[in-house]
Image 1 (cartoon, rainbow, N blue to C red):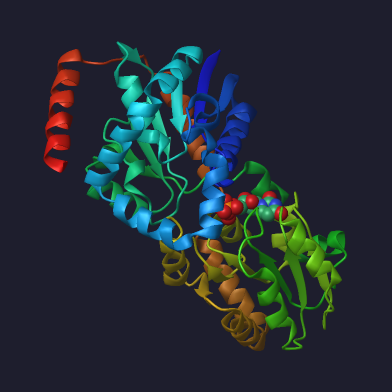
Image 2: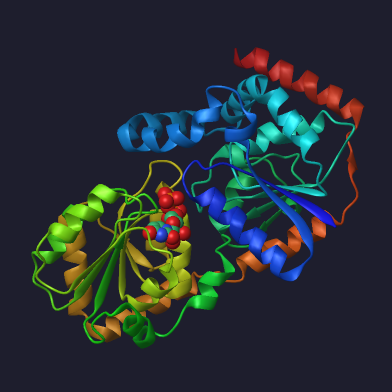
Amino acid sequence: MKKILFLMSDTGGGHRAAAEALRDAILSKYEADVKLIDVFRTYSPFPFKYMPEFYPWLINHSKSSWRVGYKLSDSRRSARTLSRGMYVTMESGVKQMLRDNPADVIVCVHSVLTPVSMQALMSFEKRPPFVCVVTDLVSTHMFWYDRRADRTLLPTRPAYERGLMAGLKPEQMRVTGLPVHPDFAASLTDKASARKALGWDPDRPAILIVGGGEGMGPIQKTAQAINSRNLNCQIAIIAGRNQELETKLREADWNQPTHVYGFVTDMPRLMAAADILVTKAGPATISEACIAGLPMIIYDAIPGQETGNVDYVIDNNAGVFAPSSRAVADSVQAWLAEGPKGLERRSRNAHRLGRPNAVWDIADEIWEYAHKPLIANNRRNLFKEFAAESKRLITTI
Ligand code: UDP
């Protein structure tokens, strides 16, 4: 049985979601032994071991430090130097992980883990093929692009262009779209049935508000700004894992039918039932909304990896950017004033960007690579590469 190893980490929800979507797509078509490993959590020493805790803390408490760090590290040279530095600390753990988990193909869905694991693989006499599945949408960090990877699969054309800038060859890459779980497209229903199942008003336009899995951003303020306009609509607010927010939302008074949820497991139904999505610029949420044909009003973006997502949505007429609660309420009011025809037009624009087959295309490529023979690492090339890297590092210092 073919063994497929996914390298990921729970830094945010997107990496696990992509790996699980691909695992389930592969297992529904092929007989395989698929394993997911949180490399930071399981095989890395301090401080990397705590990346899953540190990442959301940093994003929530020091967005500006994140912005600066992202910008400074996002060049070919800085990404290479930084990953070299990380490798010094992570080398023995990553090599141990590769020895503990022999595989026919290795699939990496995490930017930072790509160069580190590729470097470790190059130290073995032979290695399995390495496929990188990029799970940021547009402003993809240079960490993602390793010229030694056998295949790099990308969600959008701008991400592909960045790959060319990073020195990857066109034949190493393919634009597939971002993998969204196959159940998502399969569970979408028509609007009327979705609303009936949710107990929503069948006729009022519905605004769905979500801030990623953690309920991030000024969700309550935004909902209240829409509420204060007394519009003929209904609002559904997803607080995700943010329980404090959920409690506050449930205790508030609302001027129109308002449905409050905690972490939901039926996102396809909620998106099918809604007419407008108010969201932060999360790649998974945007990709899902496009598959559901749900136009977006984006209120926030994590600096760096989500910045480009905003332009992507705007440039493709799938939504607008409204970086304050007042601006969100203005957009909601304007869109509702256009009537059902306007909403349908916006829905069609969003739908055009949807890639429901991405998950299947990527699963098939991974399966194909699982059948390729092990690759012999050329020691002479390794030596050359080591000498070149050392020279580069010395120049940098
Ligand atoms: N999500 C969910 N239930 C919730 C809130 C969010 O299943 O209550 C899912 C959402 O459908 C998407 C993911 O969580 O698949 C959020 O990913 P995104 O990349 O948008 O943001 P992140 O949470 O990673 O910052």
